[in-house]
Image 1 (tube, rainbow, N blue to C red):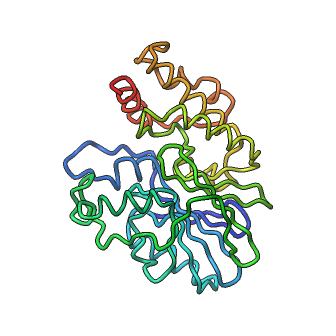
Image 2 (image 1 turned 30 degrees about the horizontal axis):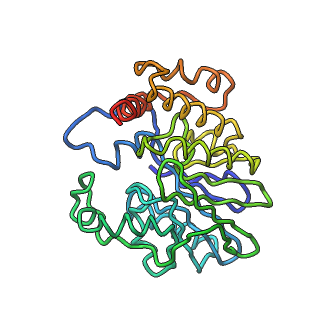
Amino acid sequence: MMRILEPAPQVLAFYDGRTGAAHPASAEMTWVEDGALSLGIASYAIYDGDQALVYDTHVSVDRARTIRRTLEERGVTRFTVVLSHWHLDHVAGTEAFADCEVAATGRTLEHLTHHRKEIEAGTFEGPPAIKPLILPTRTIETPGSLQVGRLEVELIPTEIHSNDALLLWLPEQRLLFAGDALEDTVTYVGDPDRLKTHLINLARLREMKPLSILPNHGDPVRIAAGGYGEGLIDATEQYVEALVETREGRQPPEAELRHLLSKPLDAGWITYFEPYEAIHRGNLELVVKG
């Protein structure tokens, strides 16, 4: 069941999953459960007056309708959707906002357009199908900003986790909405050839000196309490650096997750969540095979 959290003034997190219950492997497991609800996933809304920015539309249209209805009950009549990147668990509910502007990077539009037929047929990463798949109506190529009532929201295109990432920044609160660029316990690697680029861009995030970070995949308790500190960036850097060392033969490919991240875990920058062991094993296999 989706939980509505309030991590900051005029910010809502719509969180589902990460219950701690085991998800047995079966033919019924889909991308909704495996990697989204199993790890926990949040979509966010920034609102002021009658305006709201919805950051990702969750894993289904019914959840997205709950997001819209919740905001309408708070007086919102004008919506803008911003997609953090093109992965299915972040775009599946956009049909609920089909009458609104949908902003994303140009690469997000390219990826979704390229795979639209398979996504709508339910053959891209399997069912459930996302049909109709609502495409972005506005592309963001360079840093810019949007006005949400009296709030200025900065848009930050980057390449971390995926080559089409779009992050949000509330400068007055120094609050970073990180999409999947940062994740607790570890990031998911899609392109091992770009890990060093990810490190460069992670360093740029640190230069922003965020006071709080809200990732899409994280601990709901931490999110409800206001989010993560800069340590989430440090932990992600340390993990990506370890993957680079593994790929270059300087780190054994069987390195355990708790060993690689002992310092961030002991410091409380991140939390250990057992389902990320499978993500870690997949990351190691990918970087070793290239």
